[in-house]
Image (cartoon, rainbow, N blue to C red; front, side, top):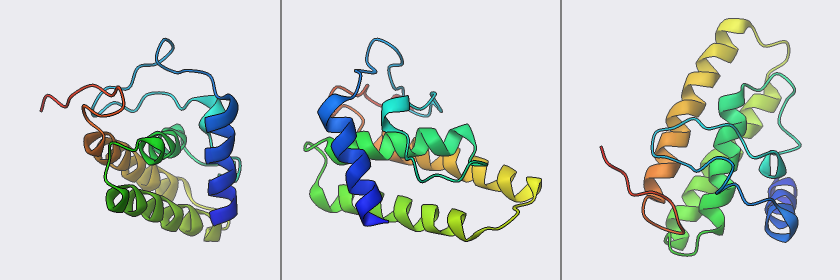
Length: 125
């Protein structure tokens, strides 16, 4: 799992498109995930909000203005969630809906940690 995460970070850092002109992140938004940063190991049933969560995690982890301990906590929380998603077999729609809502909340949290850092907008709530 850590190898997959490191691979995605490396790919995003090496050749990713800039999402600034395409989809600027705003606090609390569940913006579409930048295709260059979407975790290729996500289950096929993963909601778009979980793809956006992964994108937010990658961006936060690359942002050296965020303290390393916070970046590690963000990454570890994502990896634990991703592992739990992979453990689901034949997930029911109600489970997928709950995961979708959790990913929305997780995107908001990650974006709040990077608010005003590395070009991210300052949180206004």
